[in-house]
Image (cartoon, rainbow, N blue to C red; front, side, top):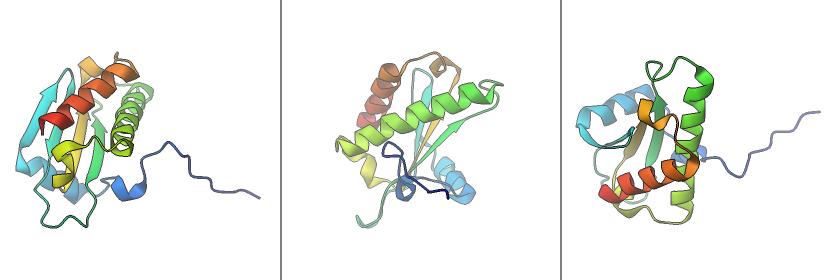
Amino acid sequence: MTCCVVLPNMLKKQYRLKNKAAFNATYRVKNSFHKEGITLFAGIAKKSEDTNTLAGFVVSKKTHKRAVKRNRLKRLMREAYRLILKSNETGNSQNYMSLIFVGGEKALDKNFAEIQNIISSLIRRL
C-alpha cells in the first residue's frame, strides 16, 4: 500500500504558476529585472488582495543540455522563493498576479546562498 506524502519543503500548488497562457501573459507585460544570471518577470498588478501571487520557474534547454543541471537550478530558485514567502519578506511582490524566475547560464554554478541572495534582491527591487 502506497501513501502520498507532501514534503514540507516544497512550494505549495496554490503558489505555482503552471498554465502556459498565464506564462505568456506574464511575459507580455515586459516588466523584468535581471541580476547575475536570474531574470524576474512580473505580471500585471492585482485588483484584489484575496488571490495568491503565482510563481513560475524556468530554465531553458539552451542554458544547459543536461536536465539534471536545469532541474537543480529550478529547485534552488523554488526553495529560495519558498523561504522568502515563509519569512514574509516578500515586499511588493505580492502586489502582482504572477512572477516568473528564469535561470540563465551564469546561475548554474552558484550555490544556494548565492541564489537566495539574488532572488531576495530581485524581489526587493520590485
